[in-house]
Picture 1 (tube, rainbow, N blue to C red):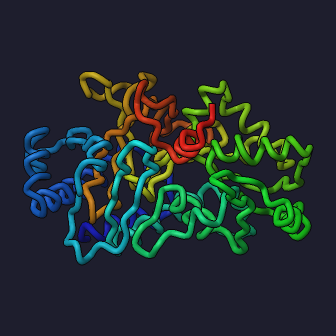
Picture 2 (picture 1 turned 180 degrees about the vertical axis):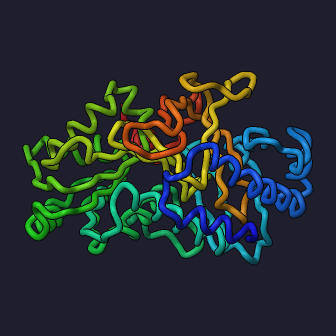
Amino acid sequence: MDIKARIKDLIVQDQFKLLQSSKDKLLLPILKAQIINNMEFSPNLKKFYLTMGKNPDDYESVSEIPSIPVSMFKNFELKTCADEKIIRTLHSSGTTNSIPSKIYINKETSFRQTRALISTLKNFLGGSRRPALILDTENVNKASATTLTARGAAIRGIAGNFGRKKVYVMDEKDGELFINFKLLNAFCEEFADQEIIVSGFTYIIWSRFINQMKKVNKKLSFPNMKLVHSGGWKKLQADSVTKQYFSETVADTFGTKPENIIDFYGMVEQLGVVFLDCEAGHKHVPDFADIIIRDIYSMKEKQIGDPGLIEIINIIPSSYPGQAIITEDIGEIIGIDDCPCGRKGKYFEFRSRVEKSETRGCGDTFAEKRGDK
């Protein structure tokens, strides 16, 4: 079986079934071939991989692959395919004074991203389409055919693949977001007590939607809903809002249980790879990806329970060098193959951004640009 067929099989299959030892054996030869392709396409990448590591044929484990710092996607045009094959450019949520990351996507990568996202989310949400309530403005998803923001891409990926009637319930006026209660009430009247999916960014949900609902003392009745959210934890942590308190408060507003409020960790540089919280509160790594925790100073691999920088391993991209990216986030691996929820592979916890690291998440950027204190 060729490399592309192996990648497709790993992406479309039911996720979280592989033991970590089996996953390691499957991912390593794929990643070797991808790194070799990257080196053949770009002399600069070849120099990087050989300077920071060794010949890919000599890799004995996934952890030996040199990881590209996420900041390099801000400063360099990192591509591994011809310009004419690029169909879209993804942009990270750069702050007012920063350069956003640019991720170049070809058709093959785009297809894999969509299939990977669907197979991961299906494990947590089920496969049926349901009414989708989007806690954001419709403008966030009105990107051109060739550009898309991380915020828009996440909403499109979740609501677009799992929603059958999408309602954007926030209006934007002078750069601020307000609940459109007419739309919200109409949605509630039509779908109250039904299974729905809700999508939004953590900080926007908390600082805008929940706060405005509290001001009018309004609560909803969606006991069978699932709310999937991400982004903005740096700002919420600064305001002493814990994940548990967030989930309990949001669940109370929607009339559901806290376990139906699902946080996920992801980034535009690794679109298609998302790490969702299970019933036990752990973030799980899908079968087509991996997580390595590295010491912030030595970059050596850390053991289970030791916090460090999160490195994401990913076999999806063929248009940019996303096989191994070191983030500016701190996390720790909690365990391997033995989560109480039954999912196999590594499971971990996101802790925080690196101290003094730029505020870059979609929700955090929203807060910064609006001057929230």
